[in-house]
Image 1 (cartoon, rainbow, N blue to C red):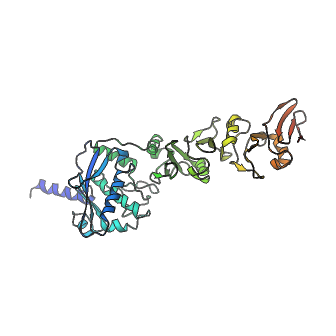
Image 2 (image 1 turned 90 degrees about the horizontal axis):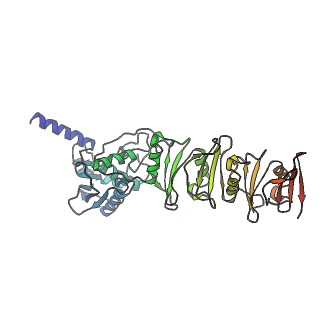
Length: 423
């Protein structure tokens, strides 16, 4: 045997052992064909195997690259063969393959029937997702991708990591990450059709941006056809949420914690319609949301934390100038009143404290400072005045707020208040 032939065979053996025999030369091809067969004595249902393979390969999160590639099962021929194989068949497929695991050899993608039916101890997400992962992993080898190790403990694993054997500190992950999708696209001579969440994450700088590395794959939110993905960064945790009507927006830190406490996208605020932004005063941060009976927000500042406002109370706070107005930042979320009829938010400003109170019959009105103190001492909405029916306004010599059954007047000269019952 010549030296050149011996070197070629040694290189071929090494690549086979690694599971990364060279794929066909990259070419612009929108459709990839494959056959589905069984070899050896297998106990898995071949029709189920074929159905899961088709769903997985054509899912936009996987090697379809958002629809840039299509995988079609054919009766014969095809670009590669997807084989549900007995452990013995896999072990004998090539040097380096094992009866324990699945293996790719040239155009043949062997899925070990034992693993297909039983999964593996290192995989925590159930057999259905493991079956999808193992197909993507082995077909990834056919697409020209090699094995990868866990890059950073705590983040999602690469789909080309040998997750069947060990997670190496990473989190189990079904779908290829952005870098793997980019590599597969280069190998096939196509461009990835990025999902809205992927596009937003890329715009934010991916792992070097505020959200840091992913800790889940992109998942279905289950409300309004939306999707989401969670990330490790964002000052304690971050997410990007998308729905057809709102687009993709990030939410993180204390604002995300408050939104989570309110029920995520299924809560009163619904989906985000902005990413996190700076407030006009340059001190705080906020996200706006689609729900909340006409619109909602969560505003945060270092001294007040994160609190939601929505509906008519938020509309009134907006009319007063948001955090730059007399009321400043919210210090509570929207709450129910003691009488069970209305709603309110408290705020940090307003010359010692302010509120906006709402009821179905009176609407939303602000009350603050000494007038608010006097109304509080009279029993809030359960006292003799009832709910406010106006905001605070100028009168000769002072300020006044009107209520259902009277008013409170503040005297500028004496800095005292007068409560008057008229009804």
